[in-house]
Length: 501
Image (cartoon, rainbow, N blue to C red):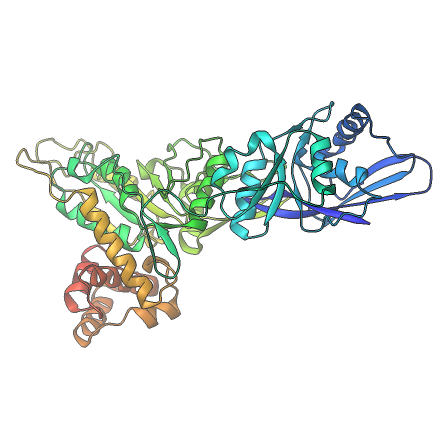
C-alpha cells in the first residue's frame, strides 16, 4: 500500500490528509472513501479521462482510494493529481511518504490550480507541516513568497509521474524565507511596515484621543471614542492600523491566508488586518456562519488586527452581546448541526459613537435636540458587561480653528516599537491587554503609592475584579511608554482617567 499527502480545510486551518491506495483482485471498480464531498467523487471521472488520454492502462482491478483521517470531511479538486498518481505508481517501488501533492486534472491530463491551493499551502507552511510539494507549474509565481518549502512545478500528469520516478530530482523552486521590510529579532524575527498611507499629522488637535490611541496601539487595548460628528473618531481608528506592533513571519502568513480566502490580493505586507462592518450587517456576516459549512466572518478576518464598529449603539443588541466572548477569550465558536468550528479572534476593538442620537450634546456651537429619555435609551443600548470589556474610554474634544498637528504616525509608531522591545525583553509572550491573571501578577508590578491609589479607587468607584485588572494592564502600558520598570502612581492615575464613568 502506498500513500501521499494532500490537505483540506477545517475551519480556518488546513488539515493534512493522507491518500492511500490499494489495487486488489476482483470485479473492476473504482471507489474513493473517507467522508468525501461531491467534487472529490467527481474526480474519478477526471482521473479516468486523464489516464486514458495519456496512454495509461486503467488497471482491471478493484481500486480503492482512502482519504484519512476518515472522520474529517474532505473537499476540493486539489486531490485529483494525488489520486491519479496513486493509481499510476501503485506497482512501482517509489517512496512517496514525504511528498505533498496538489493539483486539479483536466480531462487531457493537464495539471491546474484551484482556489483552495494558495490558502492551503499558506496554512500548512505556518504549521511547519510541509517541506516539499508538487504543485501546478502555473502556481509557482503565486507561491513564491511562502517561505521554506521546496516546490516542484508540473504541467501534466506525465511530468509528475516522471518526477517521482526519477532518481535525480529536478531543481526545486525554493521560496524566500524573508520579506522586503525592515526587521529586528527578539524572541523571533519581527517585520515593520514603515509606510504611513494615513498619517496622524492629519488629525489636528485631539491630543487626549491621540494619547489614548498610542496607549491602545502599544498594548492592543480596546478603545471607545465618543464625540460629536466630524470630531475625528473615524480618522483616528483608520490611522491606528499603521502604528500597531510589528508582525512575525507566522502572523504575516496568517493574514495572507485570510486575504486569499476573502479573494483579496495577497501582498505579504506586515500590515495588520482592518475590518469595518456596517451597523446593518447580519450576525452571520460579522461572526461567520452558514447552514452546512461554517464560514469566517468579520470577527475572524480581524484576527491579529483591528475590528472597528462605527456608530456603535446602532449595532443590534444580539451582535453587541455576542461580541463579548471574542473580546474576552480571543476566539469565536460557530456551532451548526453539521460542524462546530472555533476561529481565532484576537483583535484590537475600536468603537465610535456619538454622545446622543442627534450628536450635538458635547458641541458648544450646536444645540442638542434630544431629551433625557432619548439620550438614556441611546446609551442603554450598550450593556455594562459589554462596556466592561473596553480598556480605554475617550471623550473627544471640541474642534477649534487653532488646532494644529502634533505627533506623526512615524513618531508614534517608534514609541510602539520601543514598547514592543520592552515587553519582549521582559519575557511577555502576549500583548499587555491580553495578559491572564497569573501574568498580571508577574508583570504588572506596582510601587507602594500605586497600590494604595488602586485600593482607594477600588473602594471609591466600586470597581469590579475585571475593571481592576484592566486598570492594572493599562497602567503597565503607560509605564512602558515611560520606560519605567514598575507602575507608579502617575501611571495608575492616568489609567484610571480612561475608565468609564
